[in-house]
Image (cartoon, rainbow, N blue to C red; front, side, top):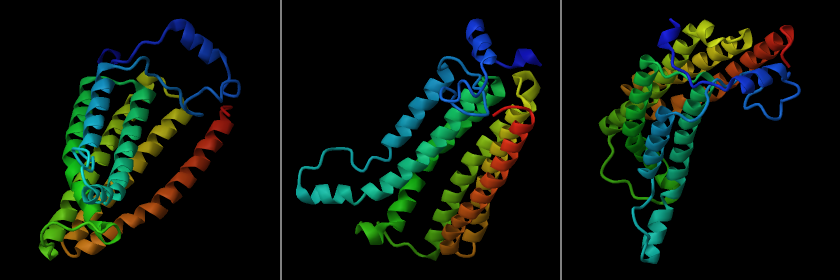
Length: 256
């Protein structure tokens, strides 16, 4: 089984010295309090993923050239708020991917496959993401909506957005499921295994909300958008309960 897992090797001296120090001694240096990052130098897969995420951000840019008139500048500035929200969502997806890569350092064929599909979905997701928030924020920004948006168009738009949203976080949930199955080979301690399950459930919740929005969009596109507000209490409750359990387990086994 171990030959199927490709991880970046650590220098023996570095690992042993880090293991010798207690979490209390290195709490200001560790990336995460309860999780040891197993990845070494940036791999070609991580570098490729970063390039694709960077390209996705460029697709969100409000304009492809510098404005030449005051009217063009104002038109570009109207796209700033939708751009900021879309940029934030992409950064959150990138951060989730980055943390997974650093935590486990997995590069087996299945993980590579999930990464490639995730990047494909992210690139597909960019334009619906930008269009949705440009349309929703048009009353605030003064931007003109392109074309007529009737009930049918709104329903299709929210279904496309929900499909992209659900697909992204379903893929991340599959990545964490795979890491959890390999917890023995990866040498995860009980707290790290619990944290892996926490991330799995968190991304599963995000994916299920996206799927729920798709179903609601068949009946009411407006409510399909509002359904994402369910994430606020759901993620807060999940985070609070999971955080308490993680701290209790860490205290029990002597990791503080």
